[in-house]
View 1 (tube, rainbow, N blue to C red):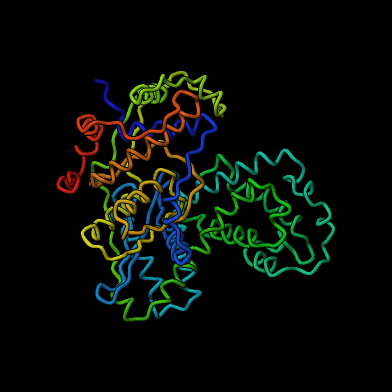
View 2: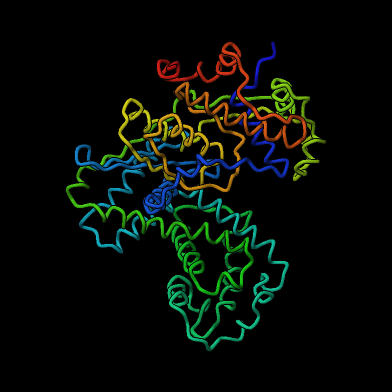
Length: 461
């Protein structure tokens, strides 16, 4: 008998559907439990903290959570997509050593943390600088980077009263770059040319020699983003790139302010713990996603789905490569891995608990489904995180040690999403109702059961 696709194959297929076609996953009522209003302030701080912990390049991810009780004190947990090196661990301890030091004045804390972040997050910052410079290079073919095309009258407002943001920007640039009496557009033209010269797409950054220049650039980006006129006169894509660079200043301020909420007694109990990902948190998956989708459709009794059906129903966004036979590495996303590790402590209880999980980049749709599935199977556990934009990551893998009932429900949720694609394409008019027999279900679960770290928990009925 034909065996059904596994969870990794289904998640991979959904990700490829969203990549090649104009497909968006379905919304669910479960996702509403993931972001209560009372958690937004804490989540904002945790998101900023996870940004500071993202020391690698674009593929690096960090997730952060914390708890505070009189019995256990202040505990902070973090996890990354790989075990932290000694240097990364030391960097994390230094963040809190500086932020909680009562002997340091606030400006000194801010400056020390900014320098520390620039030196340790250089891969991430360099990537964002290159993306901003690439955007500027594309805009350089237009007159004055397109600034005057959007609001030419501002060019002549040189005698207007300067805003507080103007004054702050002048602290971080040379006087001839933004002299008194000049307008914001006049400054931006000069600064963008200087930005391209310093941080061009093909340039390389030498640390620590350029650390001061990069620090000043991040400060300027922040004050440009909060400037009342910037959004009106800049290209939206460029403004977004400046926003990404501007995040470091409020992130550092948020961490310092957050630590200031706790008294000395609570801070003395602060314990920072890394939740190290399991060695089995990654697996290679190969295959053609169209074949996987067709296999699933036929397994559930449908006639199958072709590329033509998908193009008719959703429309194509990208052309296919020469071959769709891919081999990719799936891995457990840090947010899901951290949420599972913390939720396990409360599986055996019925006491209501709220877990806040912060991520620098919003979790993908499958991650949110996974967190909502934990809440569905254990209603007393609510996991709060920042809502995403319904993107699907093709590299998602169910975390090792996932309880059987969570994996079962997750299989149903992902299967329902695939079935909606089949239904939309006109291949099946019936909703998916988990048609697997016990033997077939065991086959579909063979992958994740074999890699579960906690075998007893994985086999829990």
